[in-house]
Image (cartoon, rainbow, N blue to C red):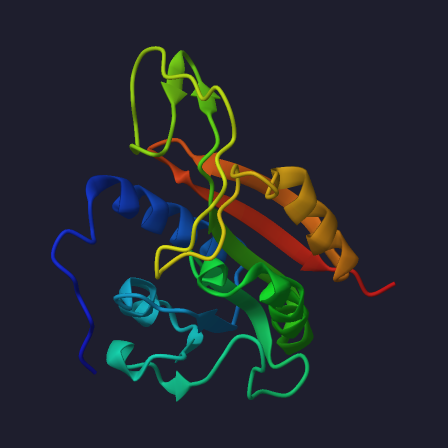
Length: 202
């Protein structure tokens, strides 16, 4: 298998985000894993020696996924995988597709779903003030207003922008029958906001 790698993609902060990806996956001890939206296939390569049945899916053949398909309509039966993950992917679809994508991830998961989304809002941690239009800025960097998101050919929406507060995303997650076990931003790359979710079977 070959991998799509773009120069400048794997910056230091992104490797910190990879660390959180693998930690959250390993903590759940899955025997099977579906990864939707695979980037440079880092997780597939890293987890390869752990004995996890790991299936990669992407709509772009450029990334050499095992399965070519969309998170909006996953070609798998219900409850096919212990954990389904999608990191920095769902923002590449219009927000009107967010709920149906969550519903599909929930459907094919037996128990857990992990996603990460871009967050442009201010981030405070132990004296660090970060405004992720630049990944990490020390000192006083203050957002005076929330900006409208303009589609840039890549992201249709981002947390922290006007009309996309975190509370809206949380409400939509719960609406799709998923409980939020934890959510947080990566300190080294606060642009990445993780959500650890569990199916609500009630």
